[in-house]
Image (cartoon, rainbow, N blue to C red; front, side, top):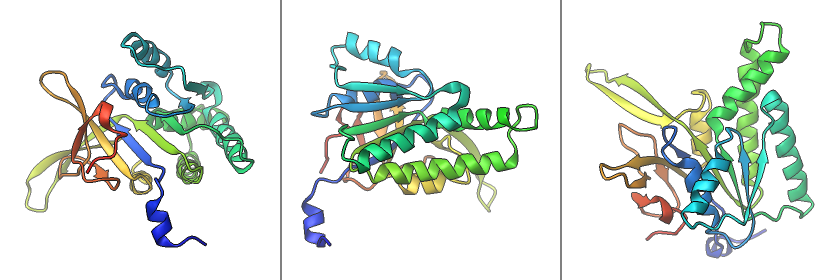
Length: 238
C-alpha cells in the first residue's frame, strides 16, 4: 500500500487523446513528441500515415531514431489489434516492456478497420452485425484500460467529428469532438487525462486547445493550461 503523499510526489504517466481533421498534423506531432523521451517510443500504426510523417519530421531536423513502429494488419484488424495488446500486456507483466511511451495512430480508423474485419467474417456479405459493434466497442475500452496500467505515457489520435445540436429554446450550435463511437466516447474521454483539439490559426500555426466549451470537446486534468503550442504539449505547464 502507498500513501497519497508519496503518490503525489511521483511523476504520473499520462493518457491523452488528440483529435483533428485529416492532414492537420497529428502523426507529425507524434514524431515530434517522441523526441521528448529519453528512451524508445512505440507507435502502433493503424492508418499508415506515420511513415510519411516521420520522413517529414526528419526533414525538419527532428530526431526520430527512438521510434519503433508496429503496424496493425489491415486484412484482419480486429485479431491483429487484440494480439498486439495481448503481447504488449504480457511483456509489461514480465518486466520486458521498455518503451517510455506508446502512441496509437489512430483510433477512428481502428474502429472502422475492426468493424470491417468482423463484418468480413460474418454472414451479412461483409456488413458488420449489431454484435460486431458491441465487440469492437468493448475491446476498444478494455484496451485503453489495459494500456493505462503499463506505467507509460499513452497518446491516442483520432479524427474530428462535427455535429449540429439544438437547445430547448431552439437555438442551434455546432460541436466538435473525437470521431469515436458515441456509445463509448464518454468512457474513452473519461479515461484520458487530456483531450485536446488541434487548432490551426490564420497564419498556419498549429496548437492545441485543452479546455472545453459548448462548441468543442476537450479537457485538461494534467495542469492549468488552456492552450499550448504543439511542440510544448508534453511540457508541464503552471
